[in-house]
Image (cartoon, rainbow, N blue to C red; front, side):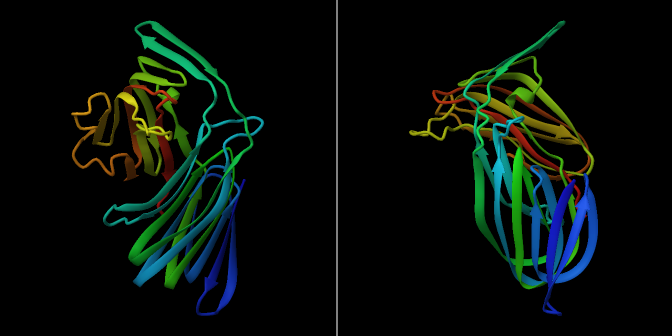
Length: 313
């Protein structure tokens, strides 16, 4: 069960009022409240939350977030966690904001998956650090001249988490509705079933890896391959990678190569939205596909797909 606590300050009355919502799964609530302050709290490890707001005059919005996340406990381990704060314009389909992630990869990660003809074989040897370390976030985002109807989206993925958001405006704003759910996702290289898919701590190879997803409401996600290490001298991964999205008449493709310095490192289809970021896609079935061969002296290049199936109230 999820508990979302929302405290709304009503400007015309100059008092603090509160709204408590207890839900399981997805939920939408119509508010029709005028306020300058909104507080959101959740202790669910994975959740998304949407605010639908209408600004009658140009307004400065300040969003502050303070939370912690764990990527491991006694029973579960994930290599990477993420959090995101987005502002989405339903008229222009423009989406801005920030995305943060933190990683704690296993010391050893070996796997092999083959699916060629009648031969289908899978082997995994994944060790886990299971360390209790937490990732803490304390940041502030300021957005100027907000006008019209906008959506503000918060999403997170972790093993454990506690999240606090403060949504403050310079002028009174009408909060039309909110929506929330707990079905965020994070997929990695070993989740893409292909003809060949193998990797270890320094190498990733995928041939025709696919992952299909049925979206009930709206798809907001990132789909990309890391191509640089975090170690000096910031070595590029050596290799080639391609990621593709198809579904509902949409087709996008991005190619990254780091083998030949004389060639462009990125080749993308026309109108590829923000290169890696897909947002506001309608319900339906989507196929994410990747093929790659990368090698690094430090650690492996991951293929990542993360986001959520989100209601826009």
